Length: 584
Ligand code: ASP
Image (cartoon, rainbow, N blue to C red; front, top):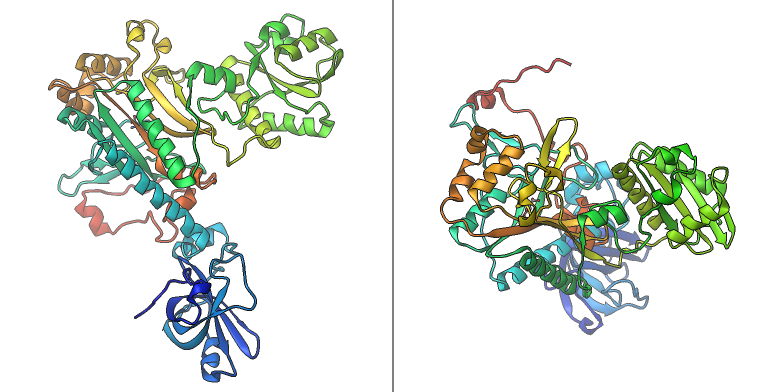
């Protein structure tokens, strides 16, 4: 038998038992007469003692154990004189009676401990060793628990888990497709799904009425820190529902997960329309853990001769609470921060409000004290606060001050990771206009239905048309998004027209879906949650990578298996592909 117990299991009540443990040697300490070995596995760490006086041969053997050797040890559980309250097994140790080396190990390239000395790149290269560390194992265990709790909730709510294919034709989620050449159909390619969107809609036509899948999706996008080319969604679709039914069902799922996994009761989810989110938070995924809402002071600040404001479409301000004593240096550093290309503001105006009639600002030359005080009052500032003001085009300035708000929230420690503020952002615009390309894009995807009351404006005031689309946002992170779909062939055609598809193109790409709509498509809608992101939110981390067993790096590479890689010329030939040498 390899083990009677795991390395995390033994307690004081087990003393005097003879046990066998198998695991990896985390550390061994040779103190002359005694050698201590910490044996670890995914359940924890147990201390094993070898005593020179009791069994010198065994002790000699133990001294030779290297880090990460795989060993099987039999011995007696004994109470420790020197207890370690930080470890679950810290009250006991094992007095070794026998040891068997099951496998040796090279010295690992970094320490397999909670705090490792390995850099990111090295840990990715030896991911299987990184995964042996308890802190990473805990993250994957959390992910597993989330998956189990999700399945059980959705199963009880009548959802069926149905798999959809990975080798398909393009699904339009706004990214590039990964493609797979077809050997049997020379010159033709499959696309990997950016999401199961069209299939889940077809399942509704088939009558499954409540579908879900914890499913891999593939998007060939430029990578950012929290993006992976393949990632996992909890993908769902329901028939015979309205937006309200979907919001309620998935508010229920989210609350269930928080209760099950974090034992946290979430408050009722706030609802906020897109226009309000942009106006008050400068973002379609507002972090509502703190206030500091955006104020539009354009009417107060323009027309007084200060050119910068006079030439701006909007003058927007936030109140930084208790910051009226900010130093020159602190303000300079904020100014540099908003001027970084990622934010793109031209400058920052501040107004320090120290009480009635006492105001100090960077625009003192252009405004009377009463005028500046009026801004402060309009924004709800109290003595001791500071206004931070940005100006320019409305949309750009909203985004910039939204970023500044998040930055100040962090600086003033208002974004606590153990506080959760969930909300639904609703009423998104149906389409965005790309001025450079001179055409409209679907903000969500082309199957999203417009609000019935806006349909009459589809062709005449396209930008004003709102969609039956919604996002679930928690703490400024977009956790999920979805929409009520179009189930009418005619309306779907009109949308494709607006998106610039010719009838033929629409038929070629999505004919299968439009044809299906002619055979009794029920009203339906759905949502998808980013599963990796959900796991990292639950784990209190900003990066999704640790919650994926084998993630890619920032250039989309798996450095452990060294992929992507070139393929054999023979294989290329078989696939009827040829490589053109790149002319750099
Ligand atoms: N397919 C959408 C997405 O991946 C989600 C949905 O509309 O259900 O974002």
